[in-house]
Length: 95
Image (cartoon, rainbow, N blue to C red):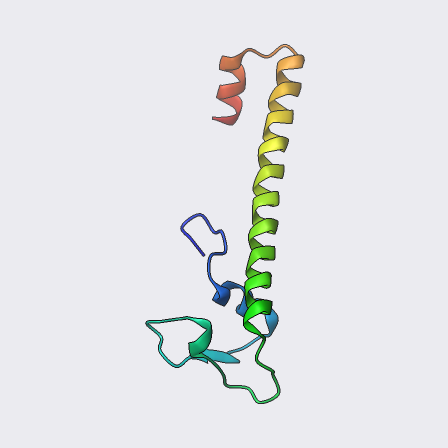
């Protein structure tokens, strides 16, 4: 994940597939699909496309969550303004 918490690597997808340390990297400094290894024999290695698609879906979920949070904030600001609060009063409430 990046510094804002947005998924940005296939590892972000892989950790959501199963619990525990079921996968690793043959080269921990070069975490690419070709270096992905499976430690748990009861788990199958996802395809590179599954990893890529899974990461894209996580990024879409994150972006939608952020957009919803911004929409909720704007809605709240609009409602407070409609109640007659000034910008200064609203800022005092929410910072």
